Length: 298
Image (cartoon, rainbow, N blue to C red):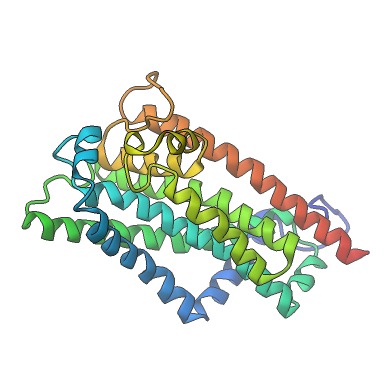
């Protein structure tokens, strides 16, 4: 059985790690579904962004998009990966806000004094956000197809070049991407223990990073300083990984990789960077949970 510091206590009776993860996952899913506003807004927001950004930027990005990827690429197809990643960011940011709500209601302290693995606490909560992100991703991909159908007069052709495996790959990339920001929002929540500060902290990082990445325009079309920042911006790697699966080609331009061939020249380095971030920030989040446990016991 897990102790407060995440270790094993042979004298305690209780659940194993996977059972702890399941209990936390179920608790957070139930809590989310009991708030219809959160559910509806999280599903509607990416739809609004996709429609608005297509209408606003679609008419002015033709030359930049043609120069980077070719004339046959629609801005809708180019934009869908950005909206997928943006919706994952918003859902991940909400994870920390939910944790602060737990603190304010007193539930967090009750969980801390229970013999439950801190790793299971974080993983169960992160997986509850993953469920919402998967649903959002499927909706965005479907809406992108509908918008493209209207734009082309019903002659969409191949929407996702990598097919069904590509769809599953896009969902997988989005999950891997979301974990690091989920961890970040939980870290902010554990440090500030204040809902307003957590919202500001998450948004302060979220929106600037989106606009200094490859999300809305090809990196080559951006100013020099933005291109330099895009190279170290995790959103660039998330968006480009999804975009590579959409277009069936290597689209990563911020670093030069030609070892694996085709889409893998984008996927391998992008996923390696995102997984490293997941492990690093996930470890920090669990460490802060352990600190909170020690403080509670004291």
